[in-house]
Image (cartoon, rainbow, N blue to C red; front, top):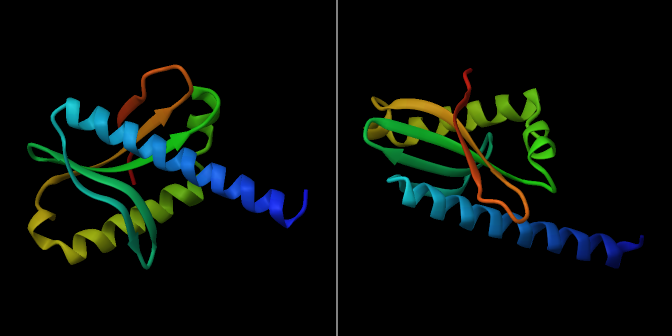
Length: 124
């Protein structure tokens, strides 16, 4: 595959990611969450979504894959550490949210299925 094929694949992956994030946001809103931030860029990395419901503040990673097992396996320890550092940076910039109960969630998006929200998917 040449550069054009790589670029086309990258654009398709980007569109898939945006659709997955849109579906995840819709699911979370239906569950009573308020989306605080989307596609948040920090010096430590990007957070797909930050959502709040009551006293819970969820840092959410959205994974879109062909099946749920592949989506769940896409979370590697290095990526989890990056998200933890990004969350710490976000909270440092938003001290009003720092007293909420922080957790890390994952939304798995697979074709022809409803997105699957895994609350408190891991702990630092």
